[in-house]
Amino acid sequence: MIIVRFIPKQFTINNAKMKTFTLGQSREEVENMLPNKQIKTVQLGSKKICIVKSGSDFFAFEPQCPHRMAPLNKGMLNGFNEIICPLHEYRFDLASGQVKSGDCGDLQVYKTELSDKGLTIFI
Image 1 (cartoon, rainbow, N blue to C red):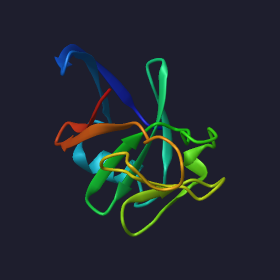
Image 2: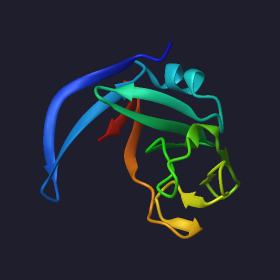
Image 3: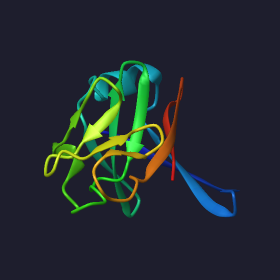
Image 4: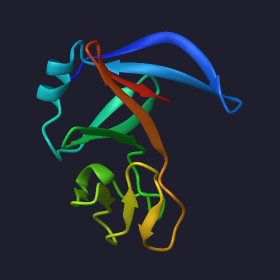
């Protein structure tokens, strides 16, 4: 079971209100709950997102492709840290969300930060 803690701290970046959520309670727990290149869907308050580990990097992103809303947790990760949509094989850069292959808008991605207290996701 993935433990998600909401840190009741709101802050503003570029006039946007942000919240933080933390997965796990330690770096080791996060490493164990997120095997390399296995996409997981988690519920953060009222929002669902996907999370994936690639090497030492962690990425958080919207769970649906912006093209036809296909479930990205059924997609694949390639060697360039791009998620490949299972429906039409559109590719999105997980660091920036930029569409790399396909004709649609960019994918919404979220900043992550791994620490000794878990994986913090900024929504």
